[in-house]
Structure formats: C-alpha cells, structure tokens
Length: 94
Image 1 (cartoon, rainbow, N blue to C red):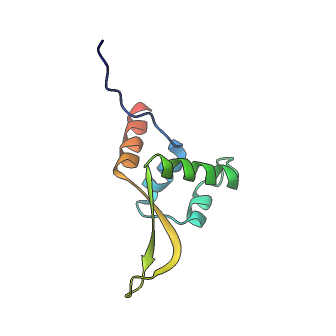
Image 2 (image 1 turned 90 degrees about the horizontal axis):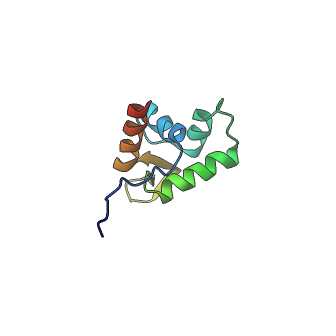
C-alpha cells in the first residue's frame, strides 16, 4: 500500500493572513481588528481566526521587551514562514 504526501491543509482565513502580509509588520489585536473592518467579521470571529492561525503555526506571538528583557506594550502577532507560504499559495490560486 502506498501513501501520498500531501500539503498541509490551510488552517486559517486567507483574509486574516493577507492583513498581515499587506502591512508587512507585526500587528496587535487592535491593528488586526481595524484591518478586518469592512469584512463583516465580528470581534469574536477575528479572535477565533487569530486563535486558529496560532494553533496552525501560521502566526507567532511575542512582546516587545525593554532593556531588562521585560515585556512591554501589547502582544504582537506576525506571520510564520508557513503563514507566508499560505498567502503565496492563496495569491497564486486567485
């Protein structure tokens, strides 16, 4: 019996991932909610998409740190390499 190696299915919403790709920088939840404005997504939808993208290794989360290494400010989310690939694949499919 042979097995096929398949690409990992896309986990996450392309609109959410494109929000990161368009800005080209890490985003806070506040930035992300503004970026998703006009899509019809509710705050709860955005948070569910964010959670799914984190669980699917499409996004990473971190804090800025001060000179002593302590977290400062809001949590930042950014695309992983897998997230960037998902955006590329979505653009090619369009």
